[in-house]
Every structure is written in C-alpha cells, then in structure tokens.
Length: 272
Image 1 (cartoon, rainbow, N blue to C red):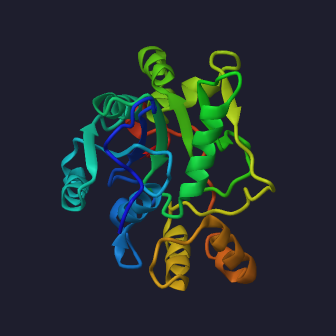
Image 2: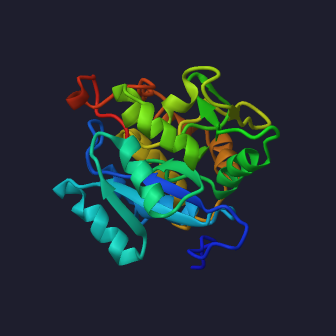
Image 3: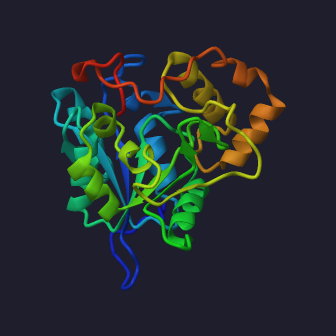
C-alpha cells in the first residue's frame, strides 16, 4: 500500500506533521487503541487513513512512557511508524516534544480513537489553515459546542509557534491534557478559524469511546469488506441507507469537553 506521507521535505514547503495521540489507558474502553477492527488494530486504521492526506509531510504516533504502552511502541516499530513516547498526563508536552523532534512548522492533531478519520477532511482543514487571509494561528473543524462534521473526524491544525506558546504558558490541567484549548478558549489570544461542512452532520457519532462505538465502526468496516479506502461520504451514505447502524451507539453520552484524568483532580480519564 502506497501512502502519500513522505519523510522528505520539499524546498519551500512547510513541514506539516500530523501527531496521532494514542495510549492504552481509557476509563470507558481500556486497550481501545489496539482493538481489532476488521482484522487490524484501530491505531493502524487511523494511521493508514490519515497518511493518505496529501498535505501531510510526516505522521508521528505520540504515546506515553508507561509500560502498558509498550505495545503501541512495538506496533509502531513493526509497521514502520514514527513514534514519540512522552508524558502520560501532560499531553500538550507530549505533542509539543514530538512536533519539535520532527521539526514541524505546522502541527495537525489527531487522536487514535477515530478510525473513520478522513484524509480529504484532514486536507480540507489544513488547506483552510494555509490559505487563510489574514493568516491564522489555529484552524479546526470543531470547537466546543460548535461543529458541523461528524464526531470522529476531528482535525486541529496550528502553527508550531502557537503550539510552543501554549506549551510555555498554559497552566490549567484541561489545557495541558487536551492540548489545544489554550489556543481557542479565550477570544483574541490567537487568530482562529472554524471550518464548516456544507451541511450539519454533527449528530453522527463515529468516534470510539465505548463497546457500542466499537461495534458501529466494526459494522462499517465489515460493510466495506475490511478495506479502509472508503471516504466519510461513503460512510454517510451507508448510515443514511441503514439507519439501524446509527442506533448501535445512539444512547452513548458524549464525554464532557474538558474532563481530565483523575490524577489531575478531575472526573474522568481524559485525552489519549
């Protein structure tokens, strides 16, 4: 399988690095990063789909130094994925250090619980960031309480300079664990851009936090015979033709936006 991501930076082209957060710990579904989906671990599904985004130059899996995440490190070694291992709770530091190690100019944040992530959607958000006039520091296809894309296609993009400033200045647990909030929670601190779809698809839930979520994406991959080259539009067509699919996880409550790991003093296990 040929991927579009290259480790060779073209002259004059910014080094756009996707960072995929992944860890085995999860309060709702432990080990979900390596859960089987159509014969492949979920992390592989995420990475292989994301690598097809044409605007990415590199992709790095960012996991923790915990022993339980040795399995993620081993998978990355086996598959030839770049991997950075860092802080368990301070995910902002983990992402920043991974981006710094790979000399990123632009950072694209993805998470390992989105096995239907779409390369065209990634490119759409990255292109909006690159083409913004006047320039912006941060672009995303979702913000707290504001989104038009299905849950599970989330893509956040920022300049390395903005990420470094957040890394230096952010002092709240939710800002450290959820990586990007420092860039957008306070109006005017940074220049931000919200990317919208042609219609509102935000009622669709395609992320994996529970067994019900996992069953839905397994059904989707089963429909496509285990291949991962289908687009999110094809998934949309499928769930609209087969509404019983959306019922599988219809009762799953979406996690509060800025819950943090209990070791920060918060309520839930937070970000990957």
